[in-house]
Image (cartoon, rainbow, N blue to C red; front, side, top):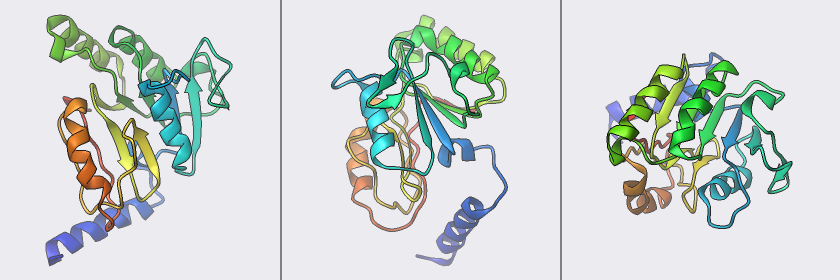
Length: 209
């Protein structure tokens, strides 16, 4: 590791240790996470993502959001983000694209600080999807957003796995940012074998506000 890399790594480490809350900390170091679209359906993204958050504890609370269930994978579920009793740092959305703008507006109204849009069906499908993206941005308020159509976010140093990947990465030495969800898994395998460092990893879609 050269001097420049060491200095950068030290700066990142100092950032995470600071008592001050930074804008992106709600995404990379959330105190709690709401999964909008959490489900028990085998093989679904909503189930895999919720299970990942449960099985690699990050030190915070997980709130499944599902209006049709009282619990998901043994955790109390809530019908909407507004029904969650605590302020939410991060919401992860795994719901149909057409329902995302309204969900983002509800998150903004509830004071959610950051959101990850896992859902696909936006710009990549044509003008209708592009219009949905623009509506999301218009309704996001001050929220920071990663997505859409992405794998999610990991912070191996914290134990945060807000993705639908099959395993959490090792303590990777660099931030890893493939462009979109479907492109990420083949490259993610290499990141999962790393064992040094502690930087967060963020595969995003087309924008990050």
